Image 1 (tube, rainbow, N blue to C red):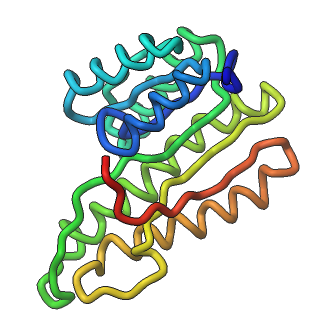
Image 2 (image 1 turned 45 degrees about the vertical axis):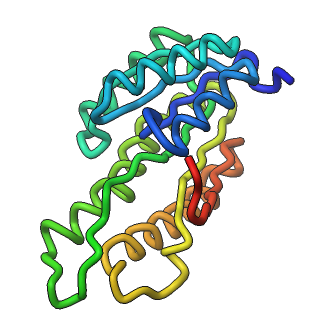
Length: 193
């Protein structure tokens, strides 16, 4: 099954867990994959090797998705190496604090989650969407969590960040769907990776 042959995908947070499985699956199906990582270059190199062994093409790129300039450079390198960009999977995440509300710090705990989950997706989408428009369409997938729709006394930072990403996803879909860009979200529960 080579249904991604000729397609170029950028997967953020692809050096481990769900991100590495997504990158490998895209490669197994013929895609060219950019394996983004923040830390863990060696893990990213292993994922890229697996993608290539499976028949895909791979490029690793270390970038902090909270940094707009780093995201711009990553997208430019993707296009320079693979000639375009068709798929963006916003999968990067940050460990979240499991604290009582009264123990949370706005900057350290709340903002850090928003910067990665919402801010990172914002930067990646703003850099990628113009290229997708030029190619006549594309697909964006934002990785959510069941935490965005359930209550927990210890997920005050993580759940709201994912809820914001869900709303962001719906707004992007409404604006760019008519231009051929599908924008969806996936909500995995606890996953063995």
